[in-house]
Image 1: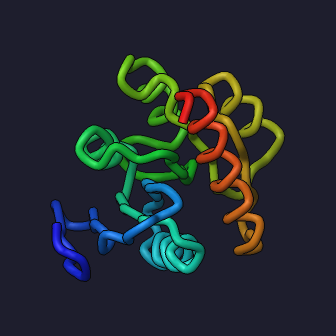
Image 2 (image 1 turned 90 degrees about the horizontal axis):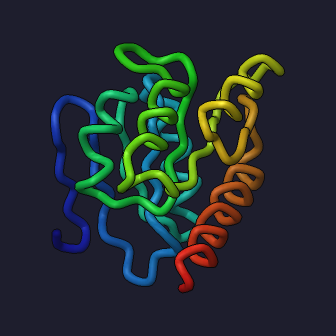
Length: 149
């Protein structure tokens, strides 16, 4: 893909421009377009390349194509929620070790369910952009250490 080009797959998945020297690629999954865009902009401002999907089913459709370093998931989404998506990512040998963060109005119950589904981090909505960046950067760095980068 050329720098500055945006490609769309389906009604909602968007591929960000290629960012030379990007800090990592993040797949942002949220059914709320405004929240997706907010997360996308905040991460791009910090040097991340961002791909978005509108729900868990779409995430599973694109995750192998875009090969993200981290996935952020909302919990409540149509077709496939965040916990179901996380569980499926963990069940697939190709994405078993992919860091996953839940970005949602997290309750203690959701945190417990998320831990069981294999979620690595939680960020409560509404979130501070700086905290979002810290969580994603920590997960990208941890993935690099696990892979010996």
